[in-house]
Structures are given as structure tokens and as C-alpha cells.
Image (cartoon, rainbow, N blue to C red; front, side):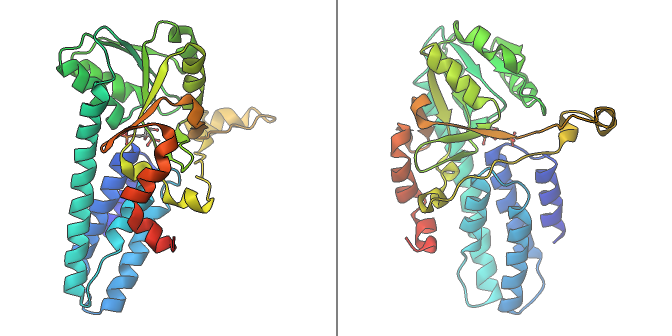
Length: 309
Ligand code: RI2
């Protein structure tokens, strides 16, 4: 369980973060666990894999790519431990490869929506959104980016570092400056932690404000999301849980002690309704949010089968 516990801790503390990266890390931890499990008994092996899956599932509740990855890897076949192990290794490798390729492909598809001279606004850090922006820049498009800090965890610092390394002129602003700058922006691009069957987007807290400001200024909002970010369970009416993280990330425990009548809340994500989204850029094409069901049916059908649909 060592590798699983280690990965679970890194995901919980956000040493590993970003919905896609979390999912790939979980798949890789399950693979390592399968390879290191000593037992010859298949039922014992199954029990161990289930425990590992549960441990990883509990780390962060919102990014749907995490349960999608875990289910993809743990629906293994085989009537012996050896066969089951082989099946897990190959599913984990396939998941990681598909997910990495997806980020690259999203970059190519999404870059077509960026025009020469565009000023782009992005929020938080999304590998898929950065892939679109850097691909457009590599194609020779003269673009600039405004990136938000994304309090309280400041993932915007990762974004500006990556864009700066790529040579892209970038401005870092506080989250509350979103609307102030939106009037100058040509296109807004964000990532996704989850997409519901109605096409709604669950992403870093503040995304719905960015969407609202973009809508008001008639700026298109492009969402960069692998198909693994779509949530099959929302077809069943399940809601996507919004993670609430520790208040320590916002204000220290010591400072809070002196504020007797103050409660600090720290939701990590919010929901953007589909009507504020222009396109969702996936590795299988750029789709309007209304087509979310088709993506779930055609690319996550194996999950629907397991759910009995
Ligand atoms: P990629 C992040 O969550 C952000 O909300 C980001 O938009 C999303 O994951 C998707 O990221 P967090 O882990 O998969 O920082 O595109 O809470 O990298």
C-alpha cells in the first residue's frame, strides 16, 4: 500500500494537483500496487485492489477524472492473480497514454479558436488550457494572456511560470480584477474538473464569475476538457460534490482565534451553467455543452454499462 498511500497524501495536500494529473497519478499508483502485491489468492488480491481504489477515491471529491480513472483501471479481467495484474497494468498504461495524448490533441483543436493578436484570459492552472495557448503561440500567433492568481492556493503562479517559459507575454492579476480587464479580452479559456450531463462546468472557484463577466462583455468562453472529465453518474441525477478545503488555506488558525464571530469558508470549485459556455474542447472535437450526453454515451459507455444503463 506504500505507493498508494504516498500518492493519496500528495493528492490530498495538492502536491499533485490539476484534475488530469490527479487521475494519471491514481492510475499509476494502482498499477504499482498491483505489481507489488504479494498474494497468490485472487480474492485477497481483489480485496487489496478495492482498498487501494477506496483510499485514492477519498482524496478529493470533485475532479471526476479521478473516479473515472480508478474505475477504468479496476474493471480488470482475469481468473488468476497474474492475469488480473497484467490487465491492471495494461489499463493503467492505456489510461495514462490516452490522457496525455488528449491534452496534446486538445491543444491542437483549441488553438484553431485563437486568432492572431488575441488577448486571452485564463483562471487557475489547467494543463489542457495551457496546451491550447502554447500551441497557438507556437503556430506563430501573436497572443497575450491575462492570468488570475487563483486564491487561496495561487495556481495562477504555475500558469504564469509556464506561459513565461514558453515566451508568451503574460499579465498576472488578482482574481477580483477579472471583470475590470474583461472588456479588453478576446477569448477566455479555462480547464475543467468535471462536466455534467447538462453541459455544466465544475471548475476552480471563481470560474463562474469569469464566465459571467465574459458573457456580459460578449467574450466567448472555451473550456478545455478531456473526455475523462465528463461525469457519467450525472445521468443518474447524481450531483458533483464541491470540495470544501481547510480554512487554514485562507486564514491561519492563530488569526482565526482572534476573530470570535468569523467563520472562514473555502469552497474549491463552483458551477458554471452551460449557457455561459461557447465550446468544450475535448480530444475528440470541440462540442457545444449541449452535446455532453453524447460524449458520455460514446466515450464513457463502459461506465454506463456498469451503472446498469
Ligand atoms: P487540468 C484544477 O483543480 C483547476 O480547477 C483546473 O482548471 C482543473 O484542475 C483542470 O486541470 P486543482 O487541482 O486537468 O488545482 O486541465 O484544485 O490540468
